Image (cartoon, rainbow over all chains, first blue to last red; front, side):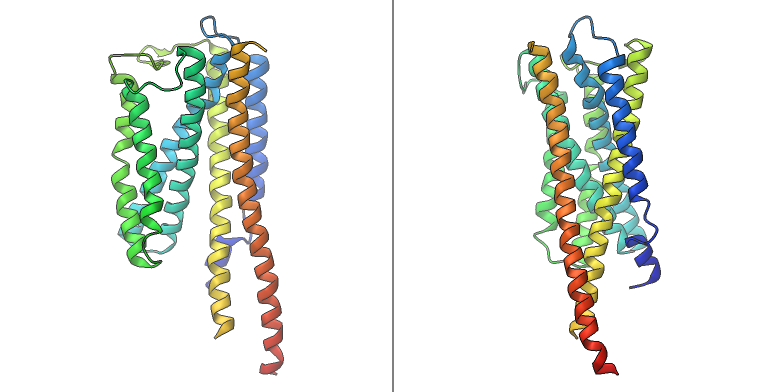
Length: 235
Length: 52
């Protein structure tokens, strides 16, 4: 274990500060959502799901993107740490993806009267993206730990990134528009207060995702270091 | 509670519970790591007299 590895594991970790920052921002976002942002004229109170549903979806995309970026770095630089960073990012993306589907379904039921519509490309494409990255874990844990597993996982994570723009653009390109498109070429279709609330919620969810990412990464690195230490002490 | 309020409450509850469960899982893992660290510290302590 090198010193730099230990430093990445826990010494001088920014995780507590990130957690406090993320908690504070989420608190502020919730206050804005429930006490400041006006009620939507068409959808009423249920529209407020938007303030967390959309940032969670965007964060899921970002996590998959980050996982693919780390996967690319692994294949390029061959440094072991990128494997763990890619895995944790994909894991985070899957969790946020599941949250997107859950909150989206609830909002869909409230707005359209249906939990799910197979005719909506936007919904189906996001589900495909989510299932693709869920399968990442099945692939990864079917291979024994080592460089081969890291490389195959990295290639898979990189392939998946092609689905992200397809899923994102489907919301804009679909002709049968039931899923709302709030951000158009004319700008955000909402009041200034709503847009401000959305931006704060987006920053809050991003901060939360990053804090959870660093926390999980810390745990996994500690686990790895402890295993090495156990092997060294057992020999 | 109106229909809209129920769905709003359900959505935010799902977010809160999911994140809480996730953090709880990480906390449980860190507790296990803490126990393992103590075990390994004990193992290292036992080995010290051998070197002396």
